[in-house]
Image (cartoon, rainbow, N blue to C red):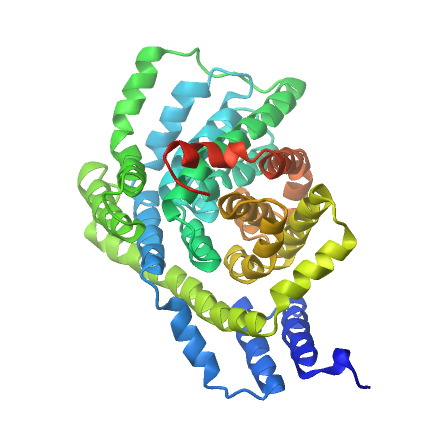
Amino acid sequence: MTGEFMSVENFATLVLLGSFFTMILLRFPIAYAVGLSTVFCLLAQGQALVTMPQQMVKGIWSFSLMAVPFFITMGVLMGTGGISDKLIALANSLVGWMRGGLAMVNIVASYFFGGISGSASADTASLGSILIPMMVDQGYDADFSTAVTITSSCEGLLVPPSHNMVIYATTAGGVSVGALFMAGYLPGALLAISLMVGSYIISVKRNYPKGEPFSLANFFRQLFHSFWALAAVLIVVVGVVGGVFTATESAAIAVVYSLFVSVFIYRGLNWRGVWKTLDTCIETLAIVLILIATSAAFGYCLTTLHVPAKAAALITTVSQNPVVIALLLNLILLVLGCIMDMAPIILIATPILLPVAQSIGISTVQFGIMVILNCGIGLLTPPVGAVLFIGSAVAKLPMEKVVKATLPFYLCMLITLILLTFVPAISLWLPALFGYSM
């Protein structure tokens, strides 16, 4: 065959994407799938393979990306440093009086904890190991308790500081990390409210118990005990938004602060525990950085093959209606979330889909929040939902049972996603208030 379809460019595109998705379906480790498909593409184009390591080094040679290991370290230190109990007590003093009070506590505690760890997995493992048994002891169904825990953990992806936002900002190019941080607060709160409404309806139907009546004195007492933990978020967000220091500098300061609080104030860690924690950080960071490096080379191939422009043209052939295109973008991200982890979706899908989103008037910041939430939903869906697996393991329940109990909460999350897609002010009001341009 001859013609445009069999041109070198189209053949290389077919090799790149075809081999990548084939390896994903064959359950290759994602870094290998990204790296090998890039090598195959370079060979198909006749390019020198030295391009691969060059692009990998270029991908991680970024001052902004230095914030990622610091935020990961901060989250692990605070997550293992004895703050979980204090945040749960604070949340209980605030919303525990409602019907299904412990479910509400779970959701609000995730909002607080997510602002410290920035990780849905850490949230599920840390809070879930405490709250799921506590909820079961008080008469809540185990599958419901697990479903609340895993879905509310996604709030931590939206509430700053989030290392995934830093990865998106670097991938999208020219996006302010501070603007993304400010943009995450209201969507995170909206997700929490949506999940609370869903939990309340189920709690009333199943007659789950209420907690103790609200006490203002108890709330301020628990707020005082949690001050040192919550201050970590203030250091990062206020410092970045106020222009005192960059996201990378704030992350480094937050690590030192988290170490001090965990060891000397809350005393949840000793020095032996600190070294163990750093081992965990290095393992996590190695996974993240190899993904960023290989995805940079993959992105280089996408750019040289003009895949973003072709994808935009293909999507617009389906419909010219901005509403349909926006829904299609969400659908693509949701499907990717079922077969890929969060970081590679951000790294690979952003260069392809962002130009399409901008063409229908979705700003870079708003699209970033959409990507993060879509990826969060993907963390809860089989077959590769990491948070779903962690929740099932913590609760010692079959994954199928947890998925069934999570169905109403999927609906809550999808409603939140639709609102974020078609009501830009939810994401953009706070950044605009603080003077960020979108």
